[in-house]
Length: 230
Image (cartoon, rainbow, N blue to C red; front, side, top):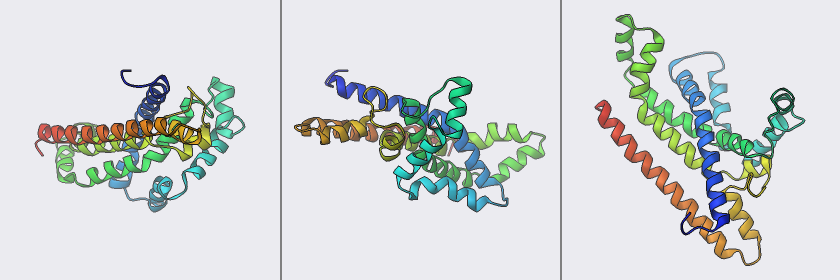
């Protein structure tokens, strides 16, 4: 890429890959959990809400350590994935995507839930009274009206995934070309004698990516609002 060194390009492309997969895999779950918390009352709802937001309040290293225990080669889920499908998660870019998704999930759910709470449920009730199934009501009324919140949640999760460090380095280490995303590359440059200039470049690239993501979120949210007439 023009203006970037090979190390910067490698870290940038890996960060984008990790962030995109983190959002793509977690978005359906984020919509489902947000809908459940917004539309249903059930025993354990407060507990589920707390668990969803737990990554916001515990140290990221703790999240990474728990992921390592669960998805490591000797972990219950990690061993099953490796033995059954030959998939290794720990110390791979896939593990970096999982760590990023877990850390960004609360922001995604919160944005979508706030948007769901703002939807006039009388519109949904009217559609059901006309014979529409709950699934059709969700996909033709609820989801389009929640579009700005879904988009905002996805963009926030994407930006958060780009900046994930603690859980990533704990779960998948700092492997060049495999798990060394922009934050880890910045950390490596800081720890390297004479790496201040490279660290500054990594910091500028990271800030620029985050700003672009946030600006894109605002522009797309306004476009969706105009499309649905809000």
